[in-house]
Amino acid sequence: MSEAFHNFIAGEWVGADDAVADINPSDTNDVIGLYPRASVADVARAIAAAKAAFPVWSRSTAQERYDVLKKISDEILARREELGRILSREEGKTLAEGIGETVRAGQIFAFFAGEALRLGGDTVPSVRPGVGIEVTREAIGVVGLICPWNFPVAIPAWKIAPALVYGNTVVIKPAELVPGTALALAEIISRAGLPAGAFNLVNGPGSVVGEALINSRDVAAISFTGSVGTGRRVALAAVSSNPMKKVQLEMGGKNPLVVLDDADLKIAVECAANGAFFSTGQRCTASSRLIVTEGIHDRFVDALTERLKSLVVGDALKPGTHIGPVVDGKQLEQDLKYIATGKAEGGKLVFGGELLNRETPGFYLSPALFTEVPNSATIAREEIFGPVASVTRVRDYDEALAVANDTEFGLSAGICTTSLKYATHFRRNAEAGMVMVNLATAGVDYHVPFGGRKGSSYGPREQGAYAKEFYTTVKTAYTLA
Ligand code: ADP
Image (cartoon, rainbow, N blue to C red; front, side, top):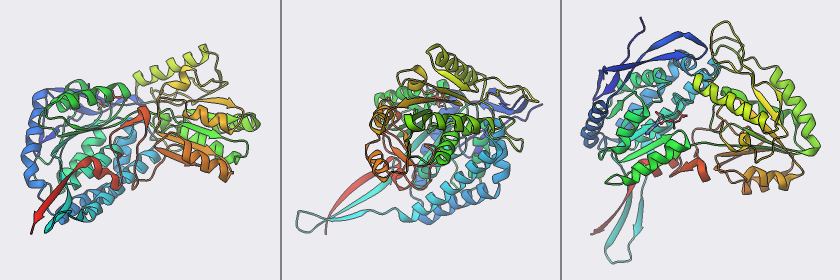
């Protein structure tokens, strides 16, 4: 019998009428637990609890907020191995990646704990005699947090921490594929000293729990990370509701990594291997388009292929694994479909793209590298969200930049070069929210803004001090003294 878990609503652990099994993608015989599928009524209770807790929590002191977030951070960091293991078991990234992400979540809570003490305002002279002006920030209300499966602890952390520290109350919906990590995090948060109802977690399908959140009049803001299609739906619902909701969307990417003739080959290969294939390529910042100039093209492809041969695809929890399985059967099917399309459209599959058998039944796919892929090909345009990357051959830097920017997305963009001139030009002209020089497009710090342009993002940035743009509302107060 698998352990049955509950939702966290109004300060209590509550069962649901329906449940879903959480399956280990490295071993589909391994059922991690049974997780609740909340009903619309469950979500309504969570929202009501968050609404009731708002007057209390939004008036808490900076010290109280600091203490709560610091406590959460300390426990996450102390239990990094255990939480990282839960994460890797249900999501399929390697244990090192799972522990690393857990540490990141702890660091995020620590950073935002400090933000409680740093939230300032402005005092401005008035144009009128005797009047003083104060510009301050206040909490927004109940915030709904809708999360994806690919970063099961870091993304919930970077939404929950700023939401709470600026005085909002929270209803979070984790992705259905990764309820275990979110629940472990919720258990830590449940003991951190928040008033009952300030934090609620409801597991369940997007079509039920997500829709109930985006349609509720009592939810003031929605922070969403997921696919473009669902993001658009969330935004439409947010502006159709009365009152209109604040909305923040982080969606897909089709991130270019440009490799110029003058690049350090070792660095370029490492950036490509890491950026495109680590975390099984399931990152919105993955370098899925490798744009390579003619003079280094063949050497780069050969060296990258050699590097891919050295990577071990296997059970996420097994020591020595570099790339874990794809998250589930549906995602694997999608990856294989894109690989077939890549071949059908004339791309040359020079490595991988094959299903692999391991000791246990799982969704194992070798990293797929295509070459001779024009930027117009489907696999160069659509986000695959798997271990699949394509190389596009270009003449020179100018063509590389044009190809890099020729996409509907704009999350992250990278360049490998030893030229200050090209690096500087690329930093200024890449149409992306984040630009990397001699670094992988994936892998970011936690104290600076994260987000993109064009079809990748909508609304204020997440993370760092910029997070307050979304999680607070500004008040301008005039006083005649
Ligand atoms: P993915 O395909 O990567 O799972 P989705 O955009 O479908 O991306 O999912 C991201 C999050 O949005 C998940 O938590 C999912 O349950 C939720 N979601 C899916 N559909 C809806 C919807 N109609 N309304 C609100 N949330 C949704």
